[in-house]
Length: 170
Image (cartoon, rainbow, N blue to C red):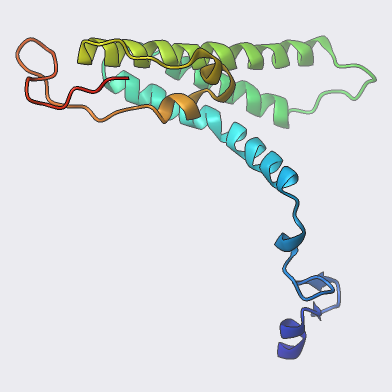
């Protein structure tokens, strides 16, 4: 068995191969395009959870709960579309089209609600405009916005960042 494992031959019943015919792992044959496609799919599936998490963070900062509600609805409807069986017909039913349209609408509404709340939070806190690219917000959503969050600095009596602290600019 150890010799078969080292040589990359089949293990056990002969159906499972750890390595290919050249003795290389299967990852050596994966094309970058396919790998990037699956990474993008995986990150897209996790995006509503990141949006929910950022919505909770915004809620803890006294901002609107709209981001949390929109991403929660997006997650629920996405699960419903993924796991609820619809009758197989040649064309999509009106329910499926409506659910797919609502997923798309919730994606954009959630992303721009998140963007608006983050811009409002940092612009008000730092006293300078905070910019987030709307195109990247639309396509990458919570991953893009979450990557631009900054540490909170203590505020002075006026509610602004105190003098002597590093002033962040965009």
